Image (cartoon, rainbow, N blue to C red; front, top):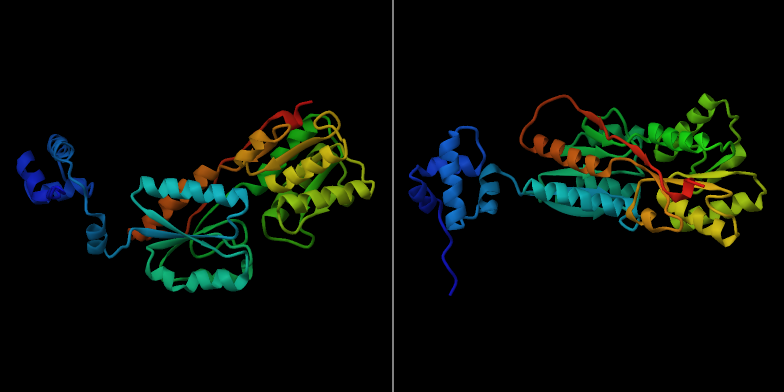
Length: 337
């Protein structure tokens, strides 16, 4: 036989306080003396009282759901980012509704204007097809936090990674090991805004600071950042006879594709060629050899983005904030000959 749910009245009775005091404790309001809060929390634990989250959200005019719109969950970085966002949201008593846009402009626009926004309190949005000219489209009537590197200086909070500094650090890591012919895999010719452009900018800054000439022939194109496109770019560099002693993959997927082709062509890593990636996805620790990579602070990005969004949902009225997550180079066997 199912036991009746414990009521707030029963908690108040056991703790010797009013129902209003129990409500203040449950909603974590700073109106309760520490000793009273302790009594109420003891009563909650003893009786097994559970908050009716649906009812509380209804009273607040909220759903307890937030949206997360990502380009492609088949890419390890976005899959792991989604996992980190879900963990961060769960710790705040919030559930995440995930939508995939396929990096298509029509689908990204649809996400911004979808009926799903009636189901969610706010949206974490990572566009790839929209760009700087679309900044005004971010003026929406709900809480929105922007992720990624396609749009800057918008009307909403923005959480991003240190693309330029992270890429510069990866290149400096290779330069410090005596490498001077550093190939790049994942270049997007003509791109001025976006992860590829920013990371190539960091790469070139490191070369310039070290007095190493930039050679455009070392830029291997891969419009989509997948393992197979990284492999194709690596094969093209090898078949063109471009001489290089290190490879910087602009994300881990293309770096792993490049690493596969180097094995295929019997090029020893790290003895002949060093390889470094960017994103610190989990599988890089298990490649052969384990891949050095830039950790862009994925968990910091998730935790910060969720926090900013929930602040907006709660009514925070402050100017748009830009937060850049901390980064570090994870040095593994692919760059330690």
